[in-house]
Length: 456
Image (tube, rainbow, N blue to C red; front, side, top):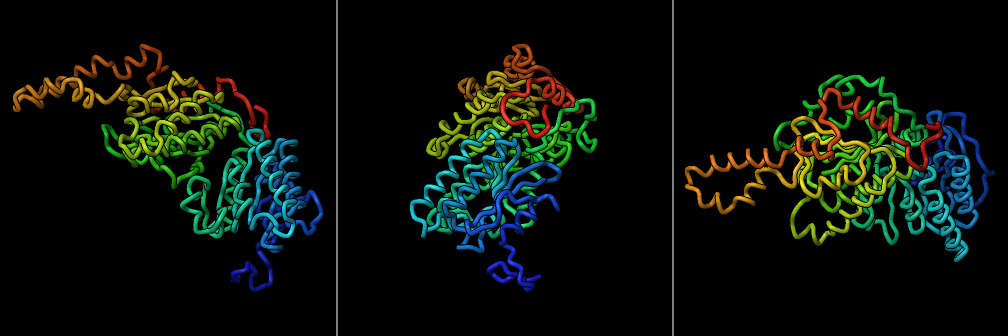
């Protein structure tokens, strides 16, 4: 059925209507409005999403472009507070031009109350935002204060003008984009179930190999060859997860999904982009994801294949030290169970930052061919033996270099030395990876914060 630009289809149905949007979000027949429909420009309701209890509110784009007045803001605050009281996820369906100009400072005060409510709820219940149209001014900050932001193709987030959206907020505010409103609401429903019904670990139900039976090591090439880590993440999880911030810092992947029956977060270096190096943006992206998972009681799996931090003056100007420190803070301060697996290499400061034993990892595993060192053996030889190599006859130089690399590997110890010093708990075969990770996560204390509707 065709629609006009205003959102009204040929049958006269306005698909911007907030009640229709809430009906599409909740399971059929479960919607219950928490207040009668009025002129406030906001509806809030409770219901179920995939069987999981939830609360949601929707701004009314059919009234003054969804502008928020004091009464509408009170409905939003009531929705958030109800979710906190009942320990259920809360979702906001946003399509709003910001504060109502006709109400002046009273509307501004109401928007401020919405911000305060979102901050009070942070870490206590999952908060999601679905941006289905323009979210301007104060309505831009509402979604930005929540845990996950999903935007449909018709959505926009901006403070001063829509043209600023991508350059100023785009990738860093929005976690997921969707082709249309229905797809955006579908992603929100999926995430409500993941975060609202986190489940329990069942290590005994984890078969060897990957999810479909393939050997995990076949997904990681030997040496330094580039590869996409996404197939490894998918094979590790029980079912394909939801990647967040996929368009931002793609050299690091952050995914929510189920593993051994329970919701987990996965952080993984992606060697397909920048060789898997950490850079300032990747560190910030990972830190935000780790903090969110920790606040919501979501255990973490960290897949490490990192040659180090990305070098260069541009990175220094981009705040790699400051933003890299955010990642150290996030992992060192996290109390949820978090297991690290070194699949291929872990070098230098990036090894520390990727949930190392020194930052309090629950367990650190490594595959047999993994390398853990201050730097790669080739780079170490070039630095330490530079003069010796330069003095050697040109015909003998390559052979000498290979010999020195072998000696460097033997001396540094690699994964064997890491095992001896206790920074790696066990060297495990790829076939036993999923079971060993599941056992380690299941045996660890659950940590603080939200753990879903079902007690752990």
